[in-house]
Length: 115
Length: 110
Image 1 (cartoon, helix red, strand yellow):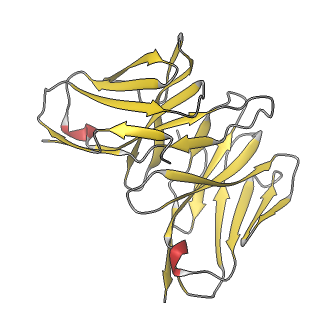
Image 2 (image 1 turned 90 degrees about the vertical axis):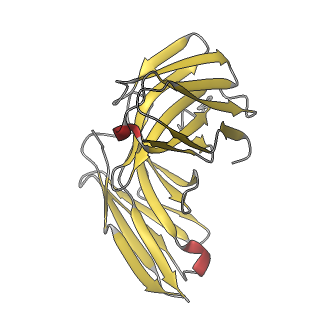
């Protein structure tokens, strides 16, 4: 979805390095999410934010941190990358509004390889 | 932990045939959604069915939900090569987050 962009699209880094993945959205949604996808495991939630002042841990937050710089921007950092953080990372947004339905809109993903 | 589990893990069909995949989940839900993912790309929302609904249609897609069995099915009729993708169910519970299954990979042969 072009309304949700992620940079970089691909990244190779070394063990111990700090890296940041960025997500921007033009949908005007308050809610933003970071997931990682591993083969055979589907998507797992890392962190989520329901508005600029709200940050919450997901099911696999260890080794990650996030920053919600603005409504439109949500960054994911790996403080000290390790090989088992090699995965496909997705950012998503949603705006349940009055319907209460949590339909999410995904970015194109960032493929991260940690050597 | 993941809430939904899809079955089968992989499915190969001939163009024009129907494809059916199932999703089972563990706890009560507000709604269940299906998403499609083309290889290496982001997920795209297909259809949402609420917990008080039993069946829903959208174009060639038909979704059923049986809350007593905690299961859902997605049927794609008259499949096309462009339907080749992975399909994920996602459940929304009272915490307003989505929990995704591991997906079903569908291959449509020409």
